[in-house]
Amino acid sequence: MQSQARIMASQRGLVRVRGEVVDAINSLGYISVFTLMDGQAVAEGEEVAGCKVTPVAIPGELIERAEQLCRDHGPVVELVRFRPLKTFVVATERLKPKARGLFRDAVMAKLGWYGAEVLAVREVPRTDEAVAAAYQEALASGAELVLFAGASAIDPLDPAYAELSHAGGQVLQLGAPMHPGSMLWLGSLRAAAVVGVASCAGFGRNSSLDLLLPFVFAYGRADASDLLRLGHGGLIEAAAGRRFPPYS
Image (tube, rainbow, N blue to C red; front, top):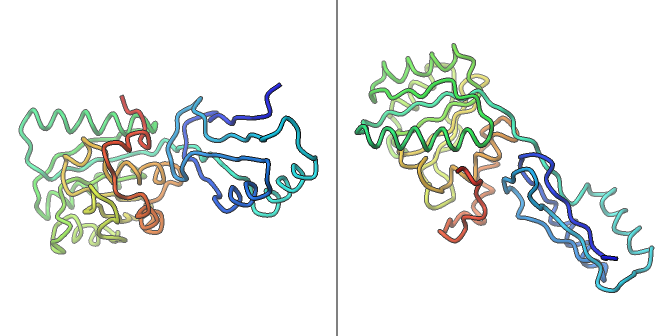
């Protein structure tokens, strides 16, 4: 007999944890609840949470109190399934052939892990006309997510922002409370979410983009509130690789 239980992910998705419920249950005594970090992306079969009791047996009253906490405040952990978003990628950087190949490989690996339907990967000049045409193509193709690489986060006149407004969209957030990747920006293009990184290199390494994408694919939105909450844990170190999806 084992006085423990483990919860495994039944599919890929975003783990949401109610930390206050975890704390309340653990404060009851004899019951230990442990989870992954809130906002972590997981694959099918990964362990997301568990529960143990310290002695072999505990009073049933403790179990009832733990269950009541969940009824009152919601479950300890939930898994939000990723949506296969129709995704349109725009890059305004001039890349050499080798760099272009690395960029495409990184984009396809990351988006593929989420089950995205990649409609197109367009490399265009950083001009008003070219960027406007890319946004119009994204709209015409029915994109639900537009990933934009190469816009200058410090230049408010960059075509990425001006033409987004002309196309019926808006910029929602410039900058992210994370490093690396603090130049990430968010917008909307009618019904589509827009996520921008400062350079194509942002797709090739773990950065703020990798902490945000699970929320985008779970909820189908690019929400500033999701982004701003990621400042706690936003210092992304090499040793933090366990927080990111196994893209390859």
